[in-house]
Length: 104
Image (cartoon, rainbow, N blue to C red; front, side, top):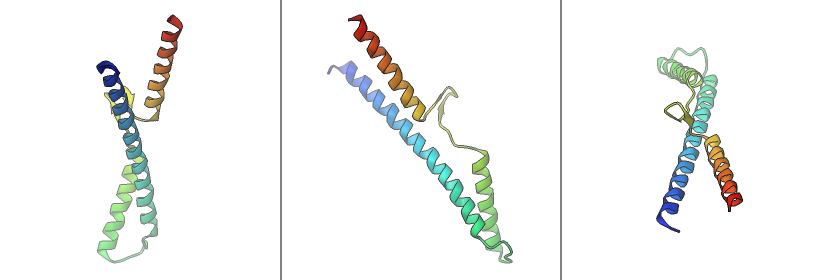
């Protein structure tokens, strides 16, 4: 394996790793939204204690904010870092290999 092939493989590995980690962060953000809403629903609604009420308000604000603004990672609003990026790279690579094999 020469140096160019090694660099290409390393770049592919980095892109795949970055896309997987970005996808995991998005999934965790969705889970956090669900957990904060469930916590909000389990607090008693008619409490006179100020600290519980402020905590309840913060949970409601957090769940609303996470529903309104979804988490996504992109590159200059052109490429989104998720599973579709990995699929697209693999699809282009396979097509390129097929063309190279047919030309030989």
